[in-house]
Image (spheres, rainbow, N blue to C red):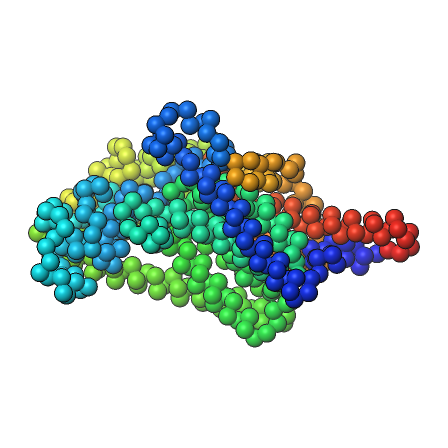
Length: 551
């Protein structure tokens, strides 16, 4: 009986979807073309934003315009990219490869030309050896802007790799002027869906792969964040999809060749690189590590895969750290050589401050302990504690910077997140409250889990501006996972749990605003239900035709 239930609860293709070689190739090609055309409709709808509509048609009633994406599930808070500031950094990155160098001049007052950028650095253009005698294109090219290294607090915020995300837009448009991350986001979103479809189709899991692509490709949070916003909040699900597509052969037991050891090396390097853009997508490394431990094979093989994953991620992170430091030192030398240049002589962060985020995140259900989801509330708590504990004289009044400076030259005010003492007092507060009352923290986590399962994105089937929401409860995930474990279908257990990393931020850091929308575990469950329903319908037809004994 158990074996029959195992066969019924399968995500493999039913016999009607078993194609020959030509049929499989046709299915793949047609499916990929349909996915691109389908997502192009969403991209088209996402382009008709209020600002572009008012700019082109000069009409104020933009809400009546058709083909608008549903923005109910879009992110409402957080800067993330610092779009206007990153664009000026990209000016020098694109033309000269130098970073971090920018200018206090507004982006629309810059001369968007390679020769102008090199002239601003007071350096010769290495690609213009034969252009010395050519006249400049515009008189204003002779007026070079002053140079600075830090624009407000972009360096101190961390995640510097986001400057590279503007390249696809610049390449496609032919100019870095006005470049955004939208084209990178679009390409990432479409590539994640194509990779899932191709991977599962090649593994004879076409129905599961297609159902998963349909619900992920219609996810309203993903569509808004990747196809309309110039920001970096929509990456966790897309990155998890790319990594799942790579690991599908291992999960389904099809990858037994020694080449499997290249998988953790590629995965670790990829996720460590994405960590330079945003920390949340890099948490997928936990899903990859869990997959290696649960995959079939000897114990030493599984341990070796995990070790290679950790080694690859650590090595890549260290390489990026050396890269950023080398670029910083190079930029410092260039800017210091300019008469009116302003170097940055303070501390800067490679990534977002962890304990600042955790302290503020407890503002969702820990307000009774003084926590609030508000940067200034964290500063108002942390800075006096730093002064008291370490004998400092930091002064905080308003904003996100202190009244103190890094150096006697008083060029840049201190950002609290760059202080080691600041992280220490926040960590002591959080861990102290947890140790003093573990039940309190357990209740916070329980409320976050409840919010995660109660407020996910809907299971939606969409096309352009049109969509249909399928009634489905994310709470079904818990009994379904238990049922799969009972049947010992570990391949499906790994599939259902793979997107669990997209929910970690909601559970461990903050569950307010739109944070639960980053999760996709319920969408994988829906795709599994589609497959189970297909197998169940096939068995039912057999029973009706030949009787119960035939099953």
